[in-house]
Length: 462
Image (cartoon, rainbow, N blue to C red; front, side, top):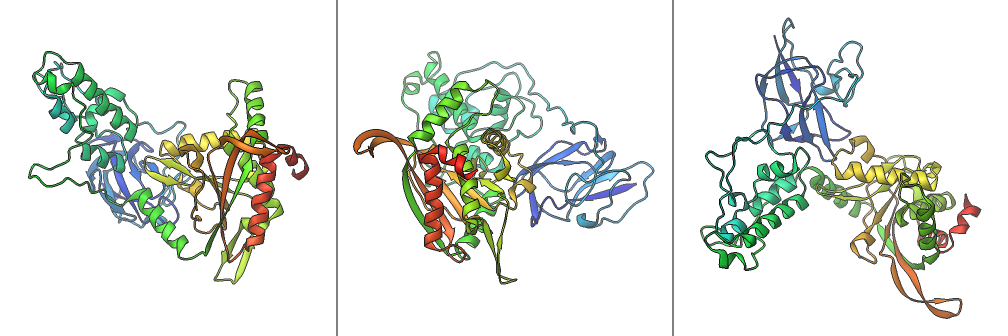
């Protein structure tokens, strides 16, 4: 009998998801909890496990389609099952004895991780024939000719929509990139590296037509279309980019932002970090300036709870939160996300370092669970990694404070009555002026700076 599977609610407030890639096809036999597809929400890429064991009768969307929550996604043929009427995901039945692993429906947990169907490899005997360098640059996927027949395409290469759009704008075939990289998510840097390799091959080819032209520096991208018009690339506003835009507009026009700056001598913090790294074991989490600032922020929030509060307009209350769920802004290929370290105030410096490292790895792989992107009470953003000194960060919705860390620079600085070369950093604090006035914001920022200037102060505050 046929069973319809509707797209479940993959997280609070999410109304749609984009199909990144199908891992099954019509006619495939699947087991309970086998991964059907990877879908991208406004918060993360999620693997969608099967709620049934049976045969895939129909796929109601193609890769790249945006599907609304509650819309039909997959049709199953299940031997011996009675036909059912699709129900909304929030009320979807849970298999007997199982526990839900995604909000809205409950496939039973298995003893191991859901197995992805093996990716079909590109087949065929390839003979590389050199072509004109300009053709390689304009359309890198045409840079090699495969004989006697073109490669057999398997499943869609794993990548995110922004990367697919970026590759398409450059004329790069992601299937060829995947053939070189193997079974992993393709990033923007992978696309750039692939184009660079093609350009290097073109320059190194001496027997192909157009060798003299190949030695010239290739243009970075096609500038005009075939009709002579100046080329443009349209990137759909979806997923993280759409969610971030909506959240930032909501925050900017809801909370009155104030930003204050403080430049501090962090030489003692730099020396502390160097000392800890020199004595750390090889498998210890790497402690950096972000970790020390995170610890300083947790200590300062205990002194100034207004920065760890939220505005409840409906109740007419300011809610002080006596715990720190620390958001760490992470730049990924899919856009900016702010995953959260729960109860950060309870963690030691080493535990914070481990949490930051794990959070960063998960975020960059696109596998951050939607629940880990909700409920932060205060956030950090490290703009110093891009060589930036200061900025005016926008508050994540529902939060009262966000602190930006500038680059640590070695510069002349007044120290004990003399001029000396010191490590200096600028801190930029944005806060909600409905909850925090200028004096409290300045005092909080000074408390953080004091710990960075003299890490021993943490002994008095802990």
